[in-house]
Length: 421
Image 1: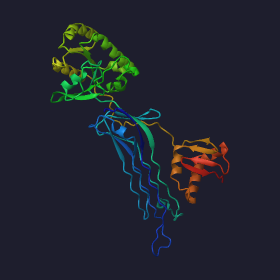
Image 2 (image 1 turned 180 degrees about the horizontal axis):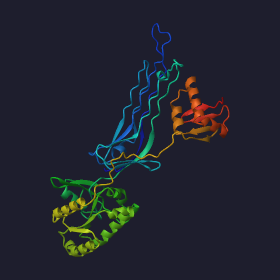
Image 3 (image 1 turned 135 degrees about the vertical axis):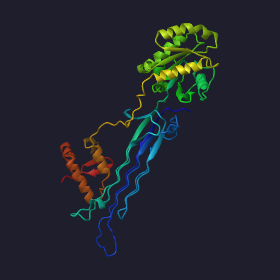
Image 4 (image 1 turned 180 degrees about the vertical axis):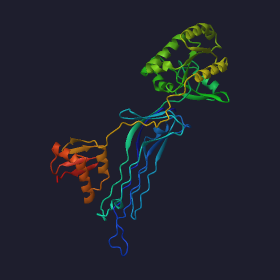
């Protein structure tokens, strides 16, 4: 089954804790600090794999977590780095924040990689804090927590040509004739329940990718029928083949309805070059319609062709016509060579305070990270944290808010007791 959207939870690895340790050697009663740093946590990296064309993996599994970094050891041993988790996605995948719907990445290049969530930094061991004044520091850091996020993945197929039209216009038959694709074909509406891709080769150096988009019906842009699920795949295509059913009662009316649905979904779709193709020229009705439809279509400024997908009539000239339309277009512009990750600029020093029941809750990116990396069980590191609160203005803000000795202060996952000094 074809899956073109998914909602998943991703988490990068936590950094390993730095160690507080002192050398213990024979005849060295006061060895110096030798606590090693923790290793960095593994990152979450998305990689474009051109060999896959569906998001089915992310329906079978929803939670993805990279490995944590290892803790630092004695004798200045640094903990091992957590293994980075590489998640493979097909070309044309958009990644959005599941809560805000903000675009985070647009992945289109084969083998393209993007680090969406970096791993947490490993905490420093006490060997890092040794100075000429303090040669036996009892100070170290816990590892920085990894980042976590719910994201949505949305696939927009990347194809040169998109086949659109009403159900039973013959799109699947045409795709099977012009390429090696094997879509399901049957004489009833909505045979195609998912997009199909086929590679068309005209000459040795002339190839183009064609996508058969499931049949659109009136109301598709509002979610009627199957159209709303697949209209997004037309956005990536450069040229549209609008296939008309030559055996239909009103082919021109069908053409107008589909164009209306395209414009309702995205007005820019009507700006794409469109070749209107009358199919089923092996039938008398189509032969009778052809002069009238050609005159109307060309009068509207569109290119026109008449074929029979079943017999192969005029298919080769029609494909060369499409190829020439592609060559007349400017270079592709929706693919950017720049790093396609979009993040808002945030001041990590910002914070705010609110009441949470009887407690005070301090929110802030930097202070929550520092709290998670502090060994509160050691007096030295706890004092250092208190100094940071003063330097960032948080202590003064708590006093102004009305904090009293003995009150509970929550910072991240830490629960602290306020004592003014």
